[in-house]
Amino acid sequence: MPIEHFQFPGADGQLLSAALERPEEPPRAFALFAHCFTCSKDNLAASRIADGLVRRGFAVLRFDFTGLGNSEGEFANTNFSSNIADLVRAADHLRATHQAPALLIGHSLGGAAVLAAAEQIPEAKAVATIAAPADPNHVTGLFRDQVETIRSAGEAEVALAGRPFRIKRAFLDDVAAYRLAGHIANLRRALLIFHAPTDDTVGIDNATQIFVAAKHPKSFISLAGADHLLTRRKDALYVADMIAVWAARYLDAAAAPPAEADAETDGVTVQETGAGRYQQRVTTGRHMFIADEPVAVGGLDSGPGPYDLLLAGLGACTSMTMRMYAERKALPLDRVSVQLKHTRVHAKDCAECETRDGMISRIERVITIEGALNDEQRGRLMEIADKCPVHRTLTSEIDIVTRAAD
Image 1 (cartoon, helix red, strand yellow):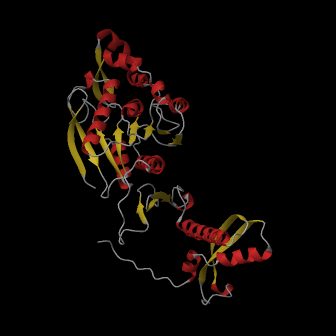
Image 2 (image 1 turned 90 degrees about the vertical axis):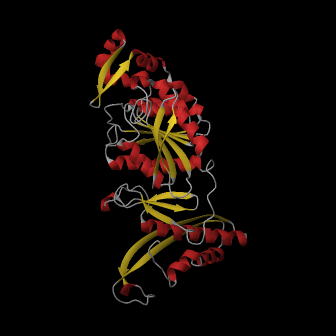
Image 3 (image 1 turned 120 degrees about the horizontal axis):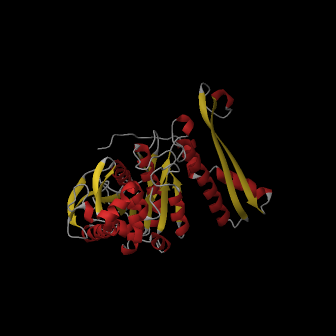
């Protein structure tokens, strides 16, 4: 998927370096990503999360804050407030050239920045934070030994992630004066909080403070085993995966209606997500969910397996068909429950099967019918269960045609 590189003017007029990644099909929504303190748009977490979201149908804009990466300006002259202003300018640029961001994502201090900037981006419907501090002043802990020097001398050079950065007293004053809790309480957007319990840069208590301050809808996902910068590829892709699934609940109403599918693209699309060995993204129309394998066989257990989905299709069709029949015949059916199990058995143990050698698949289906029905009505509903279209498909001759994509 091609990346569009360009510049746009930041809050102070400096040109900021940006990268916009879009899927081949019309995007489900545009997302704006804010990177971590002193990082750049091209750090591993930012680029991998963006790539993961693009593969799930989102367009993602990430950019370098003033004075960082390939953007113009002096980092020493920036602060938390200027980062917020840069974010708003990035959203303005998206609005003017493509579509305003419906999803805001921030990593570390970038997470705090998107929480503060959201109220100035009215089209934003959902906000996701990753390892974000509840108070931007938390960042001064990275150079706590030089805070007094900065205050007395007006500025000082500090080492952050092995690189020198000049910090001014104005930066300290800005983060100390900022009250993020009020912005969180008035967010009025869906909020998803990611945090690792063992994060030794921004402690897990920050996630607790953000969660408590926020109003519903709000969600928390633990990044067990991840480090603060999400240096492991699988952690970044997991974040992208979870954001895509979660955001769909809040963004579908805001997203443009999908284009009409033609005969070649209609149906179900299954794609590898890149997270784990087997995880798949299943898309059908406007619906998307994850399929996977259990941990015991090398998967992440993040979704149902292939046979689970097959059984689910049969079970859903069975229940729906029985419901349609009951409504048509005005039967007092309260509820149908279907339990299914797939096993492999010896063909010789199946009295009704034509195959006599080797192993065959067996699906056991147990149907519970609730309601004030007589025996005749219950018997008829059990007969109808075998007439559901999926049942008929599975028990009839099937022609599966496979070809390579053009």
